[in-house]
Image 1 (spheres, rainbow, N blue to C red):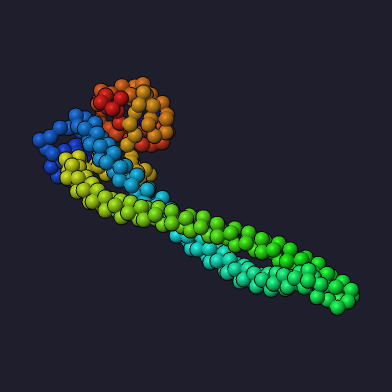
Image 2: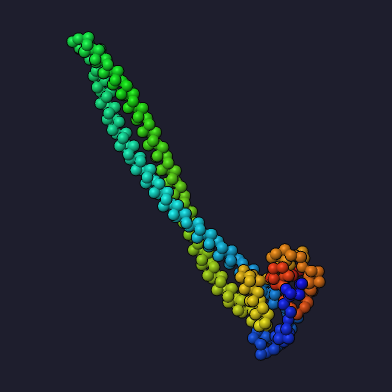
Length: 274
């Protein structure tokens, strides 16, 4: 079963250092002597690429976070609606205050006339007292309405202030996020250029067939085709690595790329990375 996941080397791979093969080094080590070195080199390059990938992932997160601009717009619309309501209540407040002023003045005059008994008959006095009672009720009603209107105005003022505070905080966050976004864009561009240059430079000595095999496996694992073996298990999928394969990896022996029998990633083991 395991053999199905191991890329057996062909005669062409064993002769990959032939000077006619791209990437060969006639005076360098054979595949069996250098395979683990090649895997280690590719592993190190992948680790650097993963750092850049994390930044690319953060870029995508920021793009989602920047959708808060639409939320800000909706909040601003809500504020405008509240302001419109507030203006209506302020207008109504003004009307009630005018009504209250007139009613209180009328009541004051009527009270004075009743106190001074300026009415010619008991009938006129009775009518005046009835008007007095109605005016007192009217003043009470106006004050009650004013209390409601003032409460509504204060509620909207408070809501507007809270929403504006929310907008200001969101705008501050957007400024920080945009700054982070621009910084990451620059870093990613520089790192990708350096990684591309470093990959081309450092993989020149890797035999063509090994590098070709690596790229084929990488098609299934765009973020990295190599899995570090830790405590006898594949670091990618967690599958247990057979003891004989683990021994082969530890001793850096063999002439073939070994893949995990479960996930298919290239297995890599190093005493330094335990």
